[in-house]
Image 1: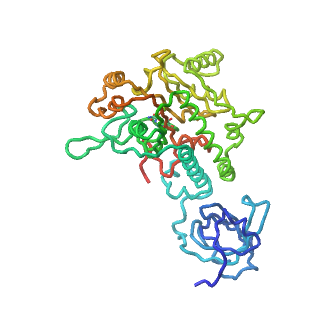
Image 2: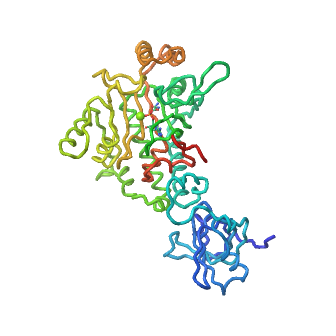
Length: 453
Ligand code: 4AD
Ligand code: MG
């Protein structure tokens, strides 16, 4: 038993203990030596800190233990906290004692070293890769994005209602469904979105949201697609498209505000240019809120035609088609803030979207495109509220009417205009952290080619 009464602290809070002797519980992240001096770096999940171990100043056994220790061995360290302006965390630890909890064998050293590894190798070792400072920082930011997202709705009268994950029908098209047997002769599908179910809870409770895992059997290998991802979806009775866009704008602004408040140090570890994030919430000269740009599909098309004529994009955009990712990148590059593209052609959007009364070939929908080429982070719409039109749409899309009878009931009993959207957490994390690929935004990414570890 150790007889010390030193406080056990975290690296993140170590600044409060300057000049005191404290104990950290963590792992050996790195170690350098220069003759009679060792410079171990410790990590504990909240950050990293460098220790100083002069041979002359510590018991012989402490020096020898650390010197022979493999990276990622677990240990507790006792030492005195010293402010050091050159240290990334602002502090260093004058090590007095160490206790090894579990030593990594020299025969099988930790596979991830500080040198560069290929992405395939890292993904194969994702369970260990998570320990590196950058990956840990991303997961901390992810957690705060999720917390801020729920907080936004929780503090604005929304009720969280959790939809089922096993469903009898498709929500977002039938080509990307994970199908399974559900007992005798029945099929079930992993949910693609909680939307249809929270339309029911919205008509019960007014303002609701859902937050959970969603699944798409995406056959595409892109930097934006996972087969399992987390979506947060608000749904509001009596809300129309303009109000929905206001909601999306407030929601994104809140999340970015919280991340900037809480994660400057993590964003630095990740290498994010925070000025780009500050621009999202930047106010006007008189402190007024500056709205996100709103762009009709038709106007976005004109913008792309002009860009093509000027040689700024490689391929022309065909009117009526969805935007390709170079198109989205170009559109978003025209603005500092996320851009809300609304009123896409109904033909390329989901069956449940309300037609625009001013032009029924268009849907009352919105895609929010993140800046810097991150593409769509939010998709949403006003929903069809007429029973007859919705039934027609289900039939036109060759969807099984029986499975949607309950959904049609919502239009039979007190139907009202209502709207909602979904934001994919991983897309939001990729954008906010400035990452190349969504695979680093979730602890264990599920993609077309990977379901291990
Ligand atoms: O645009 P989507 O398909 O919309 C819906 O699912 C609606 N039912 C949501 C609603 O109105 N309640 O998906 C919404 C968001 C996208 O904008 C994107 O952020 C994310 O979900 N998303 C994906 N994220 C990662 N991998 C995928 N394969 C994704 N597919 C969609
Ligand atoms: Mg979409």
